[in-house]
Image 1: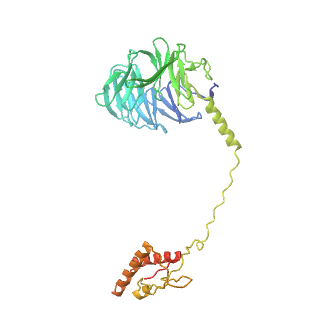
Image 2: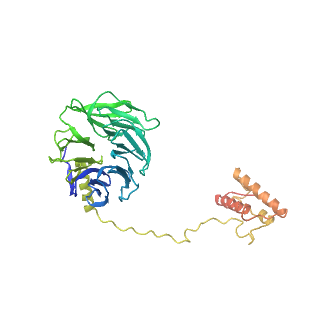
Image 3: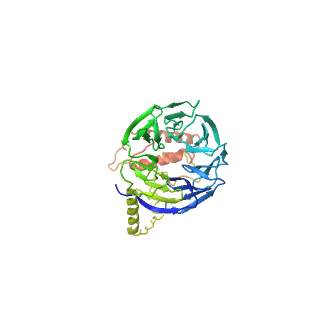
Length: 398
């Protein structure tokens, strides 16, 4: 396995309280300021708060922050406030985005607070004391870790029923990442599993007790952990590949090849996976050696006369007066086409021809009774049918 590559580092002012990254860059909570940093390391925007910002959660184009005793929702791309904030005595401990939109925050007591995407409160649930929020199994089922180390599933809908998914106790567990959990049992063994509201879809031991993680993120090839001393290493490898021995205090990942580490003093490092760094280098090489684009020749349209329809002339062309009415003798005077060999006209049995003959006879009878043929209706249809028959070389008689 190759080393990870640090593509940029940055020193921010003040103590760092939390970091979070996504595909647009990083959000860094430093003192009373929230910084937005692009993926290339440049500053995007900053938002100043009255109190220290100590927790950040991103959900699409919105960000929930915990500051003082309040929760606020701001715009991810501009830092503009989207809510007035909601405060409670004692403040909130952590906040988690809800699948489909919305937020859930745990206070420092035994309550969960459910919010809409704009930060407006919906309801408050009393679920008992907990150590922390783990993640969502779906929109209504939330997994949390009890004070005694048991995993508990809470259903937010209806009477918010809750149950422990098993009797086993865990010393530590990660947040739920793409449906998977990393857990440390009481014997120091590291496990990875896929939970459900009633137990486990699968769970297996992946380490024999040589790791005691404090934080963990899942990125590309598995889990990356930060131990109690602040060293970052892979959960299945014996060394810290590309992250060195410098201790860090915070760890965040976008899940697709980037990891951000931060120290309490404000040193940020953005690292990318070996495969991602190779793709970036290959993309730069192709852009530098790509041949210049040639200008496309404009397409010249043919003149309008060349696009004019070449519909063959039929017997009624030029016989209509300006008013669009014609008498019956003109219709009956349409000559029949005789085959080149002479003899009687060859009439083909065709249902469409029979229908057309009936329409012409009906129009002729109406004309004999003093009713004209309207150019906007019957005459246009008859003229078009006659044209098609003439083009096909057929014979028509009334």
